[in-house]
Image (cartoon, rainbow, N blue to C red; front, side, top):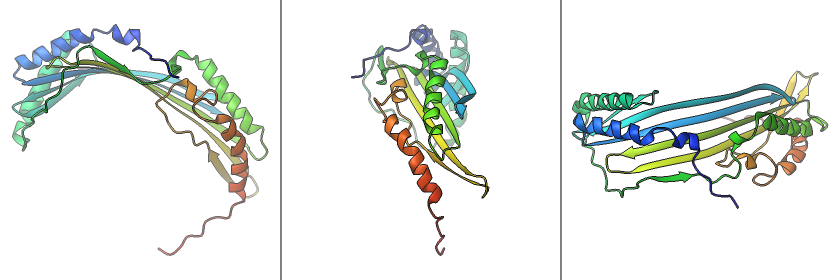
Length: 253
């Protein structure tokens, strides 16, 4: 059973409500009938191995704020990478300017549907192990171990292994009083085995079928979410069958 998790403390420590108050107040004062603010942070990790050896390991983080407004039935939008109240206010005023500029092109007036207010609520996607709490060394070691299983099989000449992990955090607040914080995690592990026919100057590949999933490290390590034991054991046999299979003959067009 997946335990309930909380939004990361460092994201909650951002001046979320202060920025929201500044943006919404500035938008309404500038003539908007509605405004909302989002703070969006995305952390992404890419790890790539070739034949069990590390090729690259990169972690990137992007963060910014965005303001939407409605002015005389027309949407306006603006964004900025800096998180401070003055920037939030100025971004809101730019969003109003965008709405005013777009109004002559708007053929249908925006009318928001009624929606309950959700004040100070949060949601975290279900995952057991935060992939960003697992050390890079442990991730690389596991991908290397999986690569070793494939390389040990007859007919496998090379193996590429990769992992992409993403953590997406969003804070939303609007003029109606809703304020919502969300955090979601997803991972995508892949392994690809390669068989090389040096004499023919050709090669064939076969990769794992594990899909990207909104789960944590538990989807990569062990068989809790995906049966890695069975798939890695079967992959060399499937690759060998692909190597022996005749090419497809194209039919009439």
